[in-house]
Length: 117
Image (cartoon, rainbow, N blue to C red; front, side, top):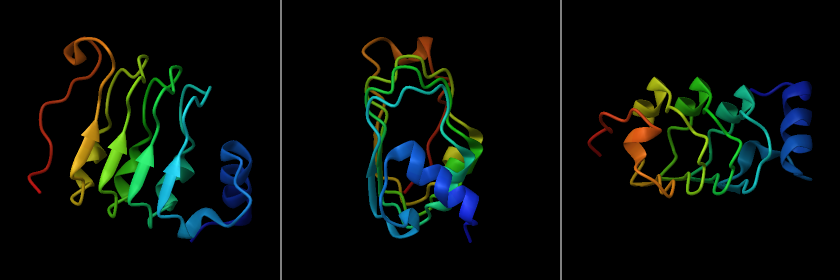
């Protein structure tokens, strides 16, 4: 359950006017911060998260692993992304992962495996 402060943080950071806890899809392109708030992991109804062209984003929070309904994660153009959290393995419904960073991904991301499903 999200408390009022967490709810207000997400609404403010992402320019949302409604309660985000029931969102199915969220696009946050060109986000200018180095990290996402940990509270992103409380949006457990999300099936699609598009973070394309968040050029300043260096890491994803461990709480991203709480988004177990996520089927699509787009990180296209996140050229400062240095690592994916271990919890990415919790995304058992994930069928689409776009890591098009425009360069050889091995220079930026230590990705060794994805869940088999």
